[in-house]
Image (cartoon, rainbow, N blue to C red; front, side, top):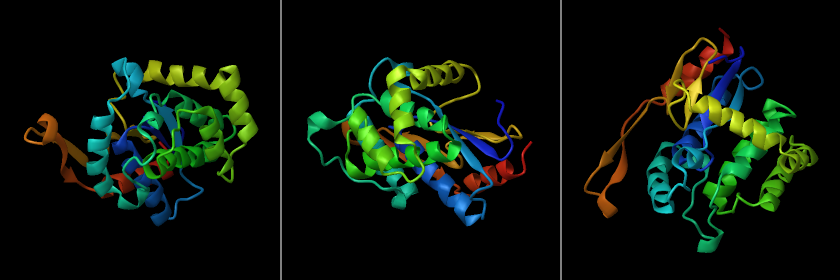
Length: 227
């Protein structure tokens, strides 16, 4: 995986609760380590619905979200409070929008990525919809909303997403979220071991078997010194 110095490549799906927790921890670690402005996050798409040929089932997403919320309580979480019919059926358009913002800068794509995650997980907004995506973009200080809109409309962003999917289907990227540092160090859901308990409601439930928050710190530090 080719990753530029002072950058972490972050492969994820916006609708993955584990990645929401991991991305929040990334931003928190960068701030705590005094590396804001020195380390950038390059968001890459790992579109689960394309791998699975179906939307991620809502019961699974909500059940995992309740567990993932304990890993990053301040990331913004709430039970879905909008009408059932407003639940996003696809995460491709918002992931396209993050790629569109990257045409402006990594900083812009970072801000839009965080805004879209917060809108879905913490505000029950249907981020599948174009107008909601652009509303979130307009709430971001650094995002060029016109650029995002144009890139969504002319297909540039979809092409970038599909290019990411082509890479993600290879041997290097294992899931959402999978992080890569410039020196080759990488980890899926760094420091977090996710298991499955068979006696949960509906036949089973996800459980966090181990959690080492310092694993995120290590990756951010590695990014700050390049290869």
